[in-house]
Length: 426
Image (cartoon, rainbow, N blue to C red):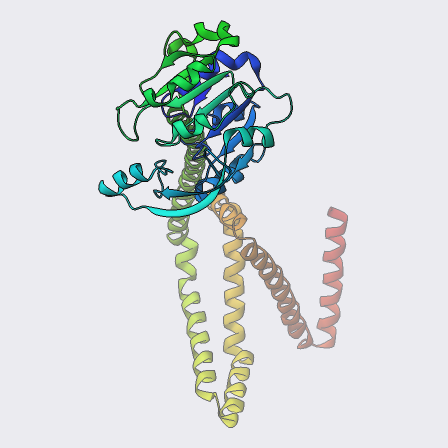
């Protein structure tokens, strides 16, 4: 598992190199600030370590409570006595300090500063109250913005002995070292200086001198770590690549669907072209030319009916009269004759379709796609055949009734003989 470094100056990398065999371990972070940004303890927390975070800034403390529920989070300042202390808050920075001189320097540089009163405890008091009995503290980190000497003096170094002590050793926001004012306390307490990174100094308890070799070199490629910003960028890149893969899949699906729709569109266009050709052939066929006058007559009759009805709307008398006129039109000899003629032409047209293979094929092709029209034509054809047959029989019956009784008898005998002949033949 790649080590992700959150610390400002790789402090967590060199500490992990020296202490990873102790996992899970314990830490104390004085001046913890953010729970993740510039945090020396975040990477350890992710690997199961637990400890104490001390932060007097209320805003940072709230974040620690939220992000480090398994740690002990203390909203207080470490000082040379228990009680209260005034802290100078520099908003949204890690520059807040108990030192009035340093606070005034920040104000001179343009920072805004507010003062609040917070609880204060000595490091010995914190250790006694919050470090579990018998718990080893594997590293102690101090980042107290110029108040290092006071914090170091507040601990009983003979009783409370962290394995490694990391102390910020320059004046705030500068490269001016100030460790000369407090280093002697650690050296007298049997700690040895083992490493400096330009911002911090590392001290190792003499009883754990076997770890000194881990501090011989600065963090390097063999530590197998990544900066948190690089890690975040890689995670974002992976998410973007995954999203891109999803989008590519959707694009492929859309393209396939588009191709399918294009094929359907081409097929429909081809069918439309075939229908146009068929319609052209049908319109130019002999039967269509022969029946054109009849179709015109039918359209004219329908227009007359519609005109009568439209004119009679709202006038009951006219409506009655138009109804009589239209009704009389239906029963006139002319209309009957026209209907009979149209019926015969229709039958002739159907028979023509049956005999002509090319026209028959086109008609079937069209009617397969228009089942309603196909059904209507079949019903009309059956009705016309029945009507013509009935009219022929009626006509023949009328002609026979005009004969004398002797002629009718002869006619009957002839019909019977003809019927018998057809029965014997078939």
